[in-house]
Image (cartoon, rainbow, N blue to C red; front, side, top):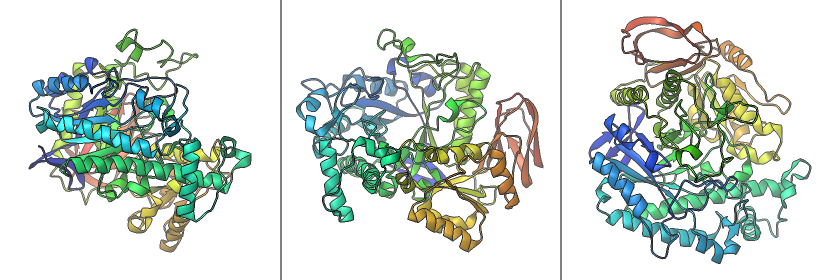
Length: 594
């Protein structure tokens, strides 16, 4: 069996496999038969996430979409054939592959039918409540059965770790998108309120209580409960997994989207409860879907990645980057999905989030931009070729190979004396509980993060609870919560005490513009690399720009550095404090600083 762990080398994360260190760069797809496993293997990738599910029931309970043709436990005896087949095919092409089963912990039909009290209603039928003790108990037994099969299989010596998924879209969102609201859930809420808050016979809110005119303390507590208990469920399955694998391999989960998902009833705001869990080694999320993934906009992080790194965890970011080859999933599996499930264009002919750039050149720029962001933030990447074939182009694969080599080359690079972010943006996950659903104030986090992303000023992102440990190294701070938690208020007071300039959000002023933020930060002594609205990333000895306009633009550095172009193989090193660029709009350039 392989033994794996997360290891930080010169501030950058790697996965140590036995005595060898690997960059956290991986590939996966939902549609195995359309996947480009061999393309990625040919271009040097060895790390692969392979999907497997207890059930073939939908992962999206609104659209009814499921990628799974086989549910392991939907038959009288477990059916591992689909999973085994794809693992064997990967190992046949890459004998030293590192496989991460991506396990969908969601109960099969028979269990749902026999345990209706333990379920919640969704548009596509009943599904397990994430609070359910029966789900946690019976789900753990199915998990043990699957893990036992994997660990006794002939490919067991190529398994490097596990990713545990569940809930809607496998991202541990409550199946009903409403806090697993049910008779069983409200009974559990009463017990939780009694134990945690010493509140006897708490009034249980009804669904209308979460809207503007009926918001109450009970509603706020239900928000807290549905995230906190959700996080405990996730940790429960991680603990089961760690025990069965003798703590010898890494385990990760989707969770903690508190820098993007603003609806507190989804259950994603309990990261603080499990950020230090000994059973979880990495947290995952997609990069943000801001502005429908348009080019020219920063696709930020859904997670407070710097807090996760501070707590010695890896952020393994899902980069499901659309390309000029991206097509409808209905065309990847003809006849399996109804025609109106997902669109590339909406009714007005405008591109949706599912549509990629028009050309290979712009596709390369999009891939490069996502890579630069994650490299400067010390995150890992798994390229998610969702329906398969998105990267099946020689120029795209050559770029993905170059980027892999860039990541590997920086392993030994010491970057402590190189430019880093001078601004910290604080995420206050408890503050979401103070705002009723539908209130525009919930948009404040995304508004500020998007505005900062095009300011030309790099920034770090921490949770407010980490302010005492990290605040002193920044020149300015941005607080994103209109109605902060007590921890958020304490972080603001610490700014005042340390005389650090900061932006805080008042109820009537949540739409800060990029220009306003830039002006404030520059006046506070923060260095601006570009004031043209470009996306700029800087960290770990890397500086990158994604251009906002055609023609000339520039990057102004704090002082002179040796600069090596990484995205132009013909570029020579030079020493300067300014980089001039003449390129089409939405081009991406990466430079190494020393």
